[in-house]
Figure 1 (cartoon, rainbow, N blue to C red):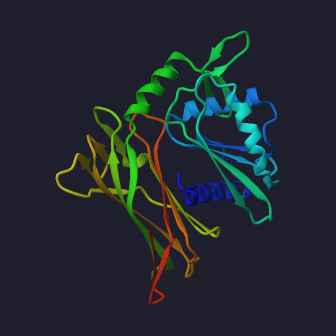
Figure 2 (cartoon, rainbow, N blue to C red):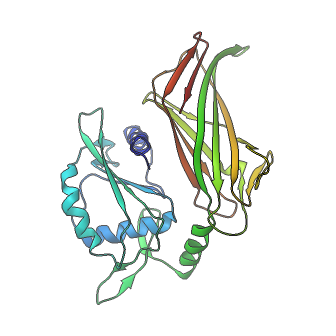
Figure 3 (spheres, rainbow, N blue to C red):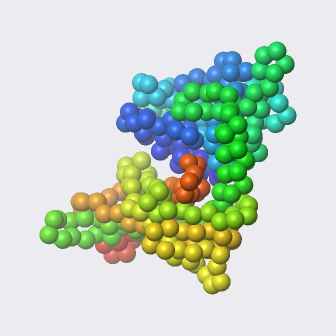
Length: 304
């Protein structure tokens, strides 16, 4: 992931912590301090990475979810901490990228992004045993045979999404109910599957959210898909997107909020999560759009 994507993901998570909203899911974990026991940290990272099944996961060090407070952390400790953690893995530990995130509290949070594309990850247990950990909710247990089958099957079937072009537009308008701002997102995505067969993304299982600076969060209505070229191995209907091979797709989504003003500071960040039919791990991509265009004060536009 690019540093701007990591920072945007981290800041969005921190904002939810301040608002006392739950944030730990299949891709995020929060720690107020660096975990002191390397073996337990290795088991937790492995379980989190295995359950993510190919999607990057985010750990934030220096954030206390229970109190909703940013307490800060020292990045310098990573150089000593992760080698100790990595020694408890059998063969391979997830690759990690770290980034300092300055916050409004004048404190620094350390963001750790672990790549999980080489799962399953195995850790050394007691008595010379090996374990494949698995995260379920916020607890970690040993993986079952069903977990491993789902991991290996879904890992090779979930397509990769690559950003080709993205834009978001805010247009001022009004109706009988009063003034509003209509937001429209358009994303050109190159989609290519990692295995044989096809994958279906139902529209009703797609989640799209965006953030403008730290002042405004948007949740978009279900998207529309349109193939971006001919010939294409993508089939789009009003209800779903079917991926049979590589191709370009145009995703559009909109939402309307009441009012006459909105923050117009770059960047605009949009998270797109496409959940496959029959699956519980989405294909994920984050769009970062920096350029702001003001068209006569009635419409603003962000683009990459």
